[in-house]
Image (cartoon, rainbow, N blue to C red; front, side):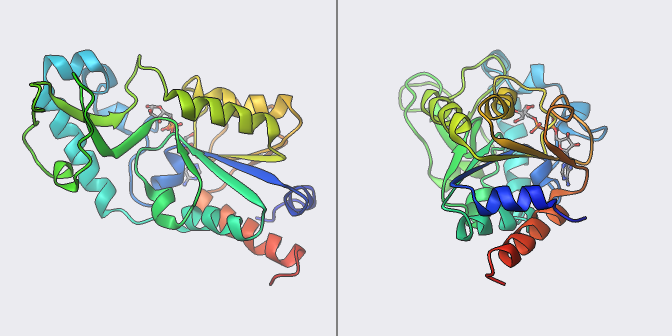
Length: 248
Ligand code: APR
């Protein structure tokens, strides 16, 4: 697969590039996506696991489910797609990753500016007093823990029905309006408000490229749809951009 000349020129002249990612960018690291036929929501019910009422109804069940996901996350390694996204920073003045993922793999791959719209599975807080519990030991304890105030300790992830972190939203929407290029990578573009970001970028003149093995509600409006695994496409984009910038 060959990135288009238009994309390469846009990237070579870009001041700000956004990389908006979803579960698909971590699929090649062995982490399950949500809506594919064998995805997490095919096996588990988000209503029973990924919301506050479910947690309050059965904190131990929800805590154990997240411990199993954290186990998968800590055993996973960033893949070539994560690494290529991190390498874009060497070629473009400003690259910001805006991710829906909670796995922390963009940080581990070396991306320096990552906005976690849906929080992080590597952090915890008390559901009652909101005291933070980020000690790594909480990533492996199998029993749900209680805070000194008596509240249960929960993962620092955005559950269905919850608001996204205000600062993350404000910065993301502002950046989307300023971006020269936005990559939408490995997201089904179905979960709002995050899914609005590429459309905000489009409205403000950004060149929007979707990297997804399938089509999504964004595909028809994106400038380009590259229907290949992100772990293949992104390293090729970096390689060709290096050549265009004479850095290869
Ligand atoms: N390369 C590129 N795209 C891929 C790859 C890959 N290797 N593997 C899968 N995909 C695509 C799938 O085609 C799909 O469109 O990644 C997308 C994953 O979509 P979802 O499973 O819906 O995940 P995501 O879009 O991140 O979900 C958004 O929904 O459940 C909530 O909070 C959760 O953050 C999540 C949000």
